[in-house]
Length: 484
Image (cartoon, rainbow, N blue to C red; front, side, top):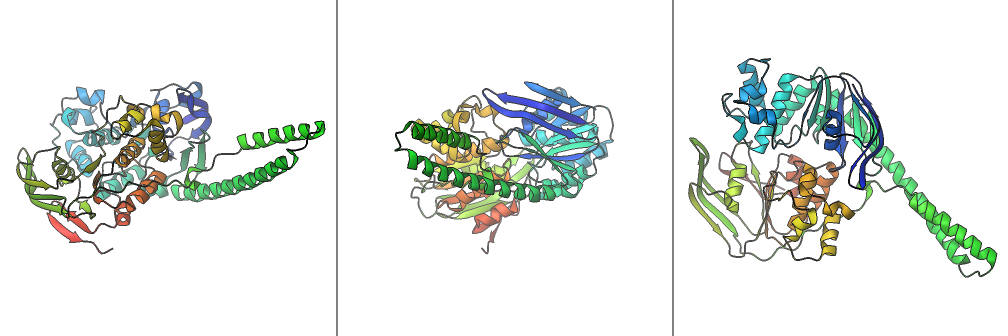
């Protein structure tokens, strides 16, 4: 059971929650939703006691376990001698049961005797999810548990969670996979700083939210038209010099100011936000060719005699299950990894913009505006305007990169692609952390982009809307022509 009353909390002067209330009953299955950066992950920390409210109470009954969306350092994982010790410290499961779980999480290549400390961030996150599923706490909090999984892995995780016998709260952009088993949706409203409760499943929530926002938009438009009429009335009496006329004008001005200040903010989904990528610089007909690329890690061959090319302005989708070599190929093309053999030929005019779900290019101690400034020669006002289009308004630009949510880091990464006119974009899972609104914003920008593009994504609809001309299939090393 979780009870939250009059919760207020924030970073700096800007509140994240203001007098928020909600209740989660024992053995409920709850979806937690909201825009990137609205405070979903922070709410988990408050529930777990990792952060403390400025005002209000957070009451929790039952042992609790939380898995964040990014596991960078886990003290229990760092101290474990093996994956087995980390997953199963109380010997709750047999080895074959542990292997079945981690195999479903696409870690079948690991041994239970392996040390977990040297795994990638994505692999550590999967292990943390596996540990949570093994231990079955009374309250389980999962923050984007399907982020690093392909379609089959996502389905298995959500299937498993649908049968979870205790209290479960999930932050996920794949809640539709858990839809029929959800009892309640909690939405963190970024604009009014409240946590709104919707009884029923995710589909029901989407319908109710749409109806609620449509009504709000109509009410705002009615009030805006009323304010316009009042301003016209104010103009008509503005020339009156009598004492009575001056008094009427002052009173009417105060009423207009009060109505404008009390006007509710327009829902983010209703705002017409447009992002346009710059025109790419000229490059030759074949800006990038890779021939006979081979790459192994120890005895495991990841890439074997790969031939890859991309034409000017072409869009290519890299397709394959996790571990097939997609990210390895991308890093070789970028020059971040060295192939064991083979050649990479690049046009002299090639200018590559790169997005990675691991955020390797970020300095987490820098502010947003410092990070973008390093990539371009724009003035501060232009930089702030650019960041504002990616939903980083006002003082948000001075926040440290390390304090951003995964979705906000994604938006910042894509914003940085705007800073220069790249003629090739390489995007490795650009939708991993994004909420629905952010996905749509970035998709529309990429659809209008005129340069070449290589994209890896486990979101089929996202890839289809980009209309790639070809798909490169790994590990088959085969090309597939797309019919758009």
